[in-house]
Image (cartoon, rainbow, N blue to C red):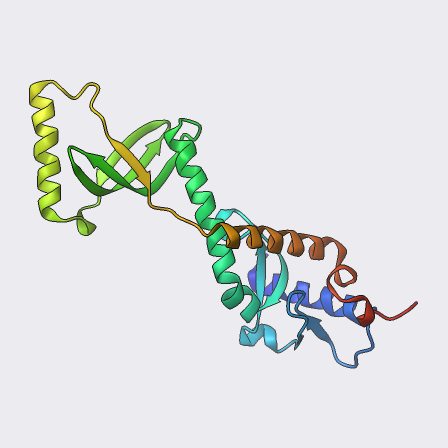
Length: 204
């Protein structure tokens, strides 16, 4: 289903559910996070957006609509923290042999020089490739000379190096991101009776 069709389906279902709970004259959708009301035209203007839970970059699925501000502006910092945390977990799993395929950035310390590298694993085979565009050319030359020296001297076995992931995340924001994900999932299942304050709901 196209994103535009999915957004319209979410709007129609949300608007119908909202009118069953509160007195409202127009067909409106209520952002479950900020509780502001939006009209159907706000779909085309981009004011209502698909909300993925968890974030789309870590495999999340579109489960609801939220307003642009809650999704993009307020959600950026917490969603980014969740994504970065997952990248760090994936990096660790790849280094420890628990993940067979991976691509990511890291810092590589060997022979007294630290380089920015691309660390990759394909079908369990690791590779380390210096990122030439973001490294000091002098450091790259020193690294290549050092590796050539080890190879010619036959000393590559047992060489020591340190590899450190560049991915960092804000722990507090990542936990808030988890709460946001849980909230969106609950809203997708239970609707406005879960998301709206009780004093907004009509008595039956």
